[in-house]
Every structure is written in structure tokens, then in C-alpha cells.
Image (cartoon, rainbow, N blue to C red; front, side):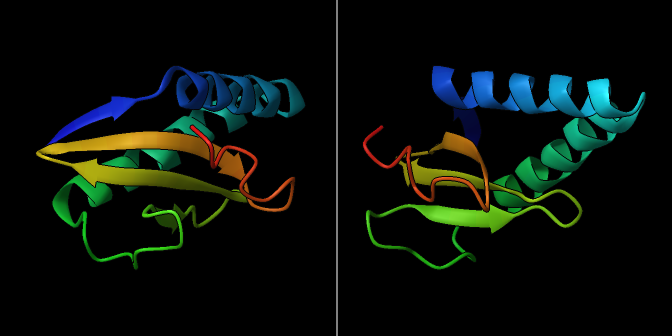
Length: 95
């Protein structure tokens, strides 16, 4: 399956990685790696996470308090958000 990040999701990903790297050298890289591991898992198992209201799916990161929100359309996984799990829940839902 093809994976496409919405512009906003890409920006959230970059912003969070920069923030963590600023907090502690190497932490931003660990964040990027964790997101990439989960994106690969989603690609292999796109329909395992339950469908939520709004027709999207969500995978929580294991270490960082973020989740990946996505939807599947045709043969493409659209990443809607790389969102912090404790700040403004579902602020991105209208994307």
C-alpha cells in the first residue's frame, strides 16, 4: 500500500521531532524512528485498528504520547495527523 501524509500531518511530525531533539539530543531521532516503525506496521496491517467515528483509524505510539490518525482509500493510506494524545483531542478531524 502507498502511504501519503497530508501536509498538516507532515508538519506535525517535523514539529514534534524538532521539539524532542531540542529537549535532548537524539530524542527527535527516536521519535522519528518510532513513527516510522508504526507507519510500517500500519502498512502491513491497515485494517487491524478499529474504525472510529469519522471513518478513521488510529495507532498510538508506544513511547511518545502521540498517535497516528489515518484512513484507507482505495490502495492508499492517508495519514491525517501525527497528534499529541493529551492536547486538543481530534482538533484535526475536519481534514
